[in-house]
Image (cartoon, rainbow, N blue to C red; front, side):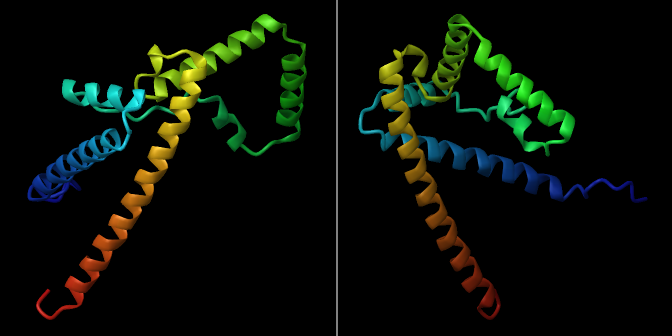
Length: 159
């Protein structure tokens, strides 16, 4: 009887993939921490790794930038114009609250950012972004290399 569930034999494969994914993520974070050249965010990441906690994916459900992905209709365009007008009319306190909220968000994104003042947070953020970009470049190169090796393996007789 076929109930649509994957066969039992595929379960160990899924578990294995999840475990491999966790190990890859851990290796990436260790590499990132080692490349930090003693920066504050690198030390914070090392502390987190020693404690056994890893970085988690952030949910974008509450992200205000997601609103702009919807096509604008005439009514939603009018709403955006009203919101822009309200933004301009807000007092300095409201703008200050908005900036403080964004700084708090940035502090949560950068390892160890909660401990930093704004100027130092910006410096650490710039360095952290640069390290992440280098990590992405290295991972892309590694993925291309592994893909090439896999293609060679499948093209060999008996592979």
